[in-house]
Length: 143
Length: 161
Image (tube, rainbow over all chains, first blue to last red):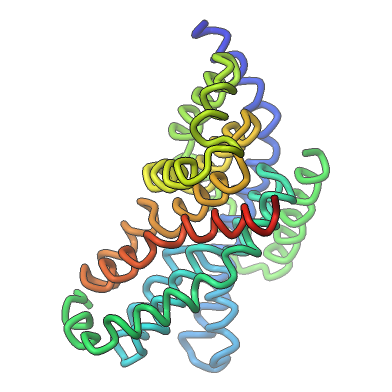
């Protein structure tokens, strides 16, 4: 029983391994290209909003959480930041190929479509319910 | 699957070419980065595929369909949300697990609720959010996020039956 499971899991893994190696390679390269090339240009502030936009679109949590922290600290509204983080949690360019590959086009398509309304909805709710407490929320940040 | 693998390799090779012609060490750095991610995920991946194996062999179809199948209604959505919250690790680990549940007969609504829950409420996002955004912000976003899996799962059921 246990062996049958190991073999069955192993078979699935062997099929998925070539795909996973490509996915790891993409993740590593995107990370490296962004930290070396785009992020330095962005920090040098010669590329402005375009650089921030590209960094935000492609980057993982280690990229967008620091950006979000800086923005909230600098005075961005609560609703905007809740919408931004929810959107980044839900949709990631570097995660999309993997999701399509493993879960199929139908499930991925449905998931993306039905989550479109979430970032604005949660943002509006956050602003309406807790927008006035944004100062105490900023104070709770460690930055 | 073959098309997906080929597409991913095409993207990967494109990035390799781009990094190579930059000639500033991005290529080596990127390959090292990818290797690092693989080393950090490999143990979780093996565990994930063991679970996938168990789901296949134990023929959990009946169980999966009963609890989070297409006819499971609210119970399926709530369970999907609960499972999604608890799933450990990043997409490399979580997507194979969800795929095996989906193939074993999980419904579209619960599957969508599960993925949404993992993305919005899961441990990965929260572990980054707490140190960077503070506990108050995390509490507000996570608390409101509790609605997300149920709403999206319901919408998936209504729109894409």
